[in-house]
Image 1 (cartoon, rainbow, N blue to C red):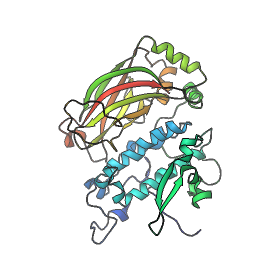
Image 2 (image 1 turned 45 degrees about the vertical axis):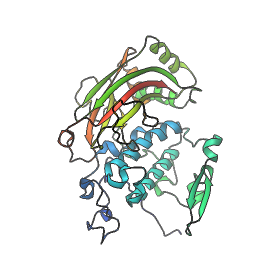
Image 3 (image 1 turned 180 degrees about the vertical axis):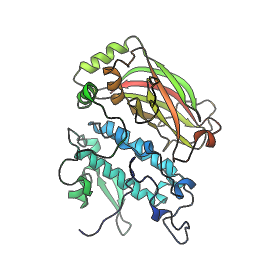
Image 4 (image 1 turned 120 degrees about the vertical axis):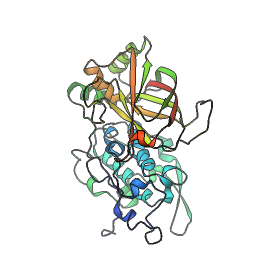
Length: 362
């Protein structure tokens, strides 16, 4: 139907980051079925989500699908889930909140925006990805099984499109405040990012940290072995391998997530370094799908991992002589999900435990 349209929640760092008004007014589940009282109270009263929580700017530059989807899965996908709170906080219950649909429609739209940017961006062609089947339900409740390859060309297969993604190549993608690479750094990141991945992940270092993060900034020193420098130079000069990754493993929530953490690499101490507009910004540590566990020995938990691409920051640091082959310093800055939250006001104990951190070439 050419006159029919479905909405999406078009949050952007420079636009409307508050919960759309129909979902919060009037504030009664009796008179407004879109209102869910279990959400974070600040979200339900219209407080904007923090800009770094919704900015897709760290995902869009990737030309590799796997690097792109890993970044987008965290920010804004997981960040918005936990930021809204309530049912949206958990994988098992998130679809009970009506905002789930609008949020996922926007994630789908961002995927289309990424594809429209071109430059080698394309969906995977491997058989496992294309032929994996999913269960859907028709209007009569009957199960319909469809393969991934049958639902990725939305205009052709599903008869819908996003108006921004039609026509000519998009010039600026989504609005973003993430620092954009320039000059040699942009060339290095683009050259590496367009290559095929390594056949096997190469781990430069793996450090058992046993770190806890709370309401105040924390730095994590990750020593690199003597051979890391040579490995990185071979990686830069090679023809395969398209990402440098920080892999955080064995993540355990000690408290319900009241804050998230912006992650920075090798801060120089300059003013503004710990704003996410800084080129030292790696990405966000999000907690969607990570359970709160009472675990006294904090063993590594399968699946409780996060991967953050270092490629953009690595290219910036390397081309400006700020990268060290001896150690990587990661700094975790706590932020409230909404702009009215001060971490020290809402969090009095440690929130999260990280068992291990690795630096990998992929």
